[in-house]
Length: 349
Image 1: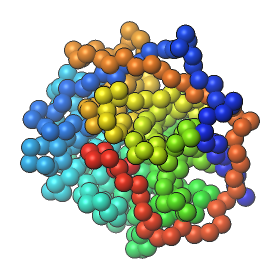
Image 2: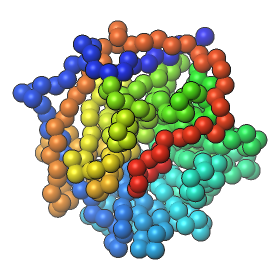
Image 3: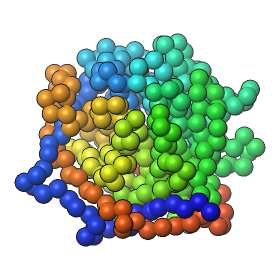
Image 4: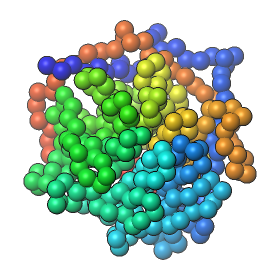
């Protein structure tokens, strides 16, 4: 039997929070919005600390993907004629972009795609079958993490890895679930994502490493769900969690040190979402107030002419000895269990 680990909820003596005297500073660097867009969402940044990817909504309400550089030199693109194209990940060298299209709120209607070298996006396929789901984080070997809807029509969403626009393998966890979403992978084979809890219908974050799956929830007494959205080769992950008041917050997570860093846009009213993280630890962040590059590199943070928002780097350490241990789930999840309702303007998880 595989054994997983889950963090205990709530602040306790196991949590060591950086004091004000020791507090480090970080920056949320506002990106330049896509010209004429009503909303610009940043979801990835390449290892050059300059090439970015995301999506924007135009004045007609149509969502397009874009890529470009932090100086605002952007290129727009679309997957087919879907009317909704969202880019989700970018490779370290900036050559490959992943994402999905056709968002009508039904996961099995999504169309996942990859694009390379600026050429039009192409559907991700398993054999000759186009997969419905999300393609997201890409490692330095070109392997991407994501999910896909059961081609047999059951409605179950499986985690997956892919490469060169093709399905590579299904990713399983010890938990029986109607929805397993993988969102990040690195060259060491560590995978991050989430599964949908069979009882609550809400997400629980997962880290798979060395044959062990850890089920991880953000250590706050008001936590409702937790998901991981990005990962780099240094085992730094990014993700999101929602509190009991319906506010979505974000974080980075050092897998090796079991350390969270809180990421919140102080100007946001209802959500801050963290997405891809590059090799330097820069994180693509979006909120209801704008999109940013999150940085804790001091004077090495990118400078693009916009005024950065200084934020406190609030670290939360979780003592490994305080983890709770869980075995395999034994019962099946109800099909089509309700997913959390995201705040208006937030991107699908």
